Length: 156
Image (cartoon, rainbow, N blue to C red):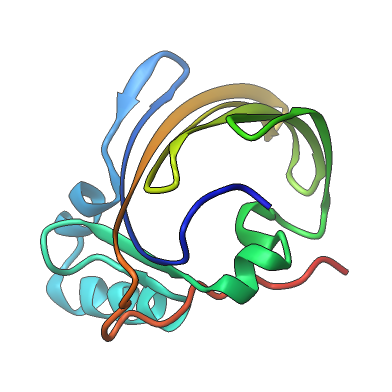
């Protein structure tokens, strides 16, 4: 388990696809028609992702951190961890649907701050696309308020 605190976390991400900057989640939501945006925000909130209040927030409970599920991906992926220390974790994953490979690293700056950098290459319709993502996580407090705990499906 990483040495991070349970509670409410706010995050920002910078993503690019094939070298071109991609809009962040909040920017993409703004482009949806109002009814579609409300449906998407409600669906995300059901799964523990809140986009209101000036940023994207998630609630990570002690249970989800203890179970090591805070970093899981799809059951169609196999994750192999490389080096793990108190300050950094490295991994590589291979997924079957869609066919993709990823490499990433989480750097734990403190119990209240960490950064994840990842690169993913995916095959879609016979074409390879590479995306990079940098996610900066900041702990905002122990009380999650009305944000539900992040819903992560266990691996099958």
